[in-house]
Image 1 (cartoon, helix red, strand yellow):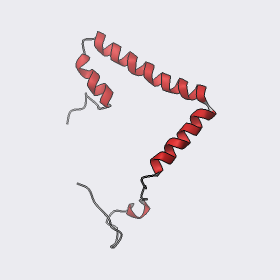
Image 2 (cartoon, one colour):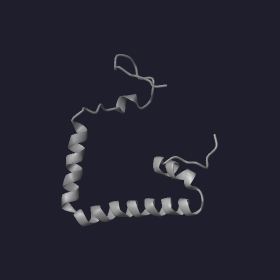
Image 3 (cartoon, helix red, strand yellow):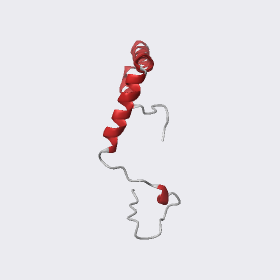
Image 4 (cartoon, one colour):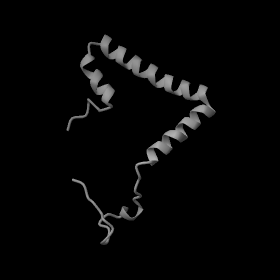
Length: 85
């Protein structure tokens, strides 16, 4: 259930007055800032990204070799497969 606040009445949530709207041009600005960071430190950026690729590959290979290949999609989605609700 989502709560929509139009600003015309008193906010029903304690943090509603701190919500800022994001315009559609902001993601492009963030991408530009990220690109600027990448240009400033390309080696560190590539090493950081490569680290995540290697860890993901190692986890996938580990699940494949332990006959738990059915968990690979959950690993990719980032969901907890051991928590029962």
